[in-house]
Image (cartoon, rainbow, N blue to C red; front, side, top):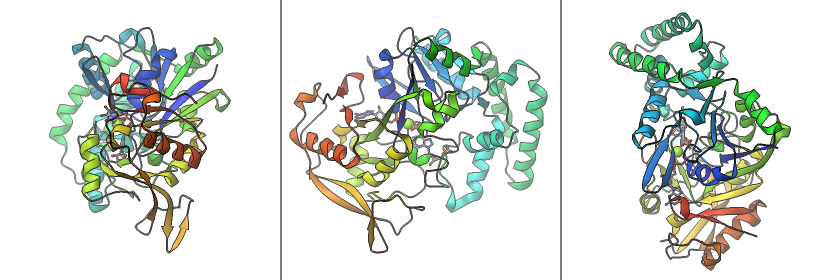
Length: 424
Ligand code: GDP
Ligand code: IMO
Ligand code: MG
């Protein structure tokens, strides 16, 4: 068996959580491979709405194993809150969750360093989620991180050493006032560690490879999106992990030859939260209309998301980087009210039009649009692709022709049953 990978092709929040939940019945194991609580994956079904940050989106289906892979960074505080929030809704997932001993831990001081660093950057801040992601991955790559497996051994000393050096940095370099926030946070953090210890902590790379060898199916769940990738995103306005398909190999310990289908998710338009370039951004009433119709506010931070038209230059770049075999188009219903839809098919840079994704997306990049007719009707009640209006079919066909990749699912609302499979 090979592992399939599902990941975002834009700047995150494409609807990955919802689709993973819908596809989970077809898999034995769901595995998160990178990112941490900067992610917010929203699931809606049976009048339940749940935002998951660390826990994979397969937990609401019976008899499925959910794995938090080695590439993920875990904040015990957020983890505990998530477990409690699930328990409050009647879900005990302890028997279904397996956590890699090699996953790195977000320390209370990592969060403070994230805040201090953003504050110091001022106008040039990344707009991070302030969850400590950058500082944690920095320590991982700098070979100074603390891993989940450490909490079972000589962890206190390692913890103190790390924390003390972070405090020194906060005090002496950033001049950041942290003592009060730190104390409260540290207490909660250790409570989270106690809870974490009650879960199955394992070398999940062995487990996943054994499962594949036995013919069990695995779906790897991405977080963030391709355009936030540490190498290929709009650096430095990116996250600190490899969000692309190759990240699934590293973040789970699965060989490239064991990757099967690559399911790429995109919104029928674009959004971005945080700073950084966004060529098709609409800073006008059309952008406002998209935000309102799509309820585009961050699942993790509540910040308004920036909105704009679909960008095929960026989408094609994402397809190339990931080797996408099929696509899933989300939030088609958000475009219900538009007479005319615009799609970016090229970038004009210094008077020349290119379809190549440039080294730097800066203010000189002007989108070149084509216009397509809108469907101007509500899609939210549709449950069958045969009932799609002709304009929606045309919109999808246009994307397929431009990218050469089939769109196999279109989503018309946040609920499970608003996920429509398209057969060729
Ligand atoms: P993720 O981070 O990729 O899992 O996506 P988020 O959960 O952060 O953001 C997607 C948002 O869109 C959530 O609020 C979902 O409930 C919502 N959503 C997902 N699919 C659709 C859809 O087809 N239509 C609409 N209107 N909302 C959707
Ligand atoms: P999901 O998995 C959208 C953005 C932040 C910021 C940049 C760096 O829900 O799609 P970080 O906290 O990672 O250092 O922030 O990345 N960002 C996201 N945007 N969806 C996400 O996750 C994101 N995770 C991080 O807004 O611009
Ligand atoms: Mg999200």
